[in-house]
Length: 87
Image (tube, rainbow, N blue to C red):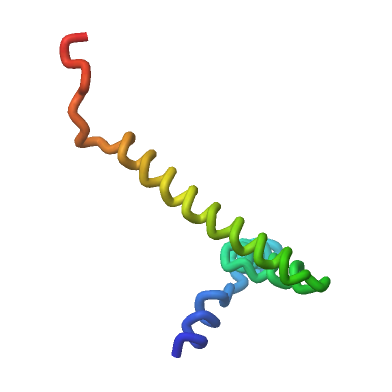
């Protein structure tokens, strides 16, 4: 069932014969899933040491991005009290 849902999630309907717009939507979906990058990466052999470095870098980047988005959301929250009331 999961494969079926992934297929449906990547299905793009062409409306009014506008193939270019549908192609752009499909490219955006595949880019978000990382399919195009995986195909590009598998075109050539990747040494195991380089693959480990790349996976470690991607993991560090995920941690950094999630931490920064958490901090930004904390600072940008709307229910925050004004720290300088009298100014």
